[in-house]
Length: 198
Picture: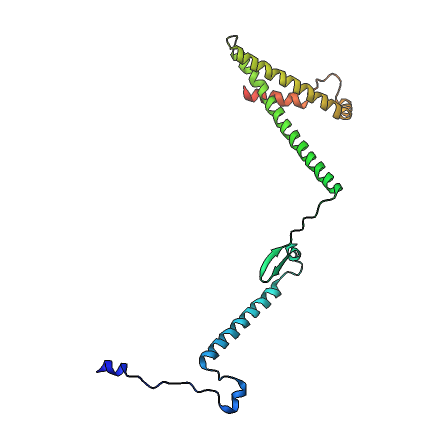
């Protein structure tokens, strides 16, 4: 019996339409329409409030080149790719900067190599003293090559230092008292490194 009551068609509750006197204003707004309109209005109000807050917190001096070089077309973001050729003078400047950078890197690496060779010098002498005659030909050749390279770099370094510091040498000679033994910093460093290795 209860099931039958549920199945019986009930009267259809239709919402009233706009009165004839107000038909010029369009359809009568129902509650569901009001809810949609209110949600839309409040969401727009919140977005505007957030944008105002963001604008008030924005740094006036902030600038990025993307602000100029980008744009939106129909909602799609595009970056302007301005591939303008460089001037010849600018290209020459960039090439010289690259060349100078490579020269400085090469000089740094050469300094590292000379430091390593200077460190290896006392070690070779020590190896030679330990190997008293019974070493193979390969070891002797390797030791000879290292000795030759060390002497060549040492001669080169002393020639460079003599050219660069000739004025300083005259000042140092004026300060040194006659009859006292003179030591160079290189000899002092080598004696310290050889003492620490032994």
